[in-house]
Each structure stands twice: as structure tokens, then as C-alpha cells.
Amino acid sequence: MKKIIILALFFTINMFAQDSIVCKQSKSVMFSNWYVFYPDGTFKHYFKTDDGQLWYGVGIFEDHGRKRVLNFKDPDLNFKWIVRAQYESNFERILIHRKSGFKSKDYYNTSRRKFVYFESQQPKV
Image (cartoon, rainbow, N blue to C red; front, side, top):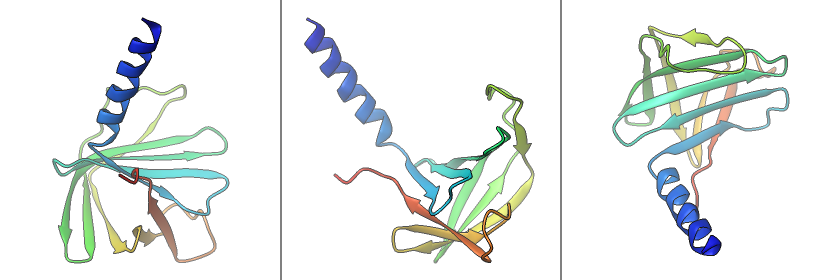
């Protein structure tokens, strides 16, 4: 009986994971910076520092050629974290499509370079 429950949970988890695309910042040691894109045109953005700070934003995105335009909306005050989150709201950001993800200006100064790169973490099916 336990095996059946474990298998049922395993397949349920896989189904939930396939409805979004996660892109994480590559070559980042002290920061966690990632976007979750959903098929309905919405996204969530998480940026966490090594000292425990968290920035969180939600909004809608549109693709225009090689550009993905992110429009951050009003903060989602339902989001809870261990520490108080800083909300990103009411601004626009542009990501540029690359082979396996996106590149973007380094808005948080996480590297010495002008751009940061986000790699798609979606499962290979």
C-alpha cells in the first residue's frame, strides 16, 4: 500500500512541475536569482542573497521576437517567507532569449559583468 501511495505522489509532483519553466541565474555563488514562467503569460521572480534577504515579484510577460518583456504588477502580499520579503512592483524588465534561457542586465550587481545569464531548468522529456 505504501508503494502505491508513493508512486501516486511521485506522478502528481511531475504533473505539477511540467506547467512552468524555471530559469535560474548561472554562475552565481552568493545569490539565488530565478524566474518561473507559466503558460498563461504570468511569472514569479525570486532573488535571495546570502544574508537572507529576499525580493519577490509577480506579473505578466509578453514575447516580442527575441525579447521577453516582464511587467511587474502590484505586490502579492499573500507570499510568506521566513524573513520579510521585499516586493518588486510596478516596473518593466526585459530579458533576451538565448539558446537555453535568457540574458538580462545585471540589475542587482551580482557580477562584475554587464549581463547575467539565466538557464532553463525544465526537465528533458
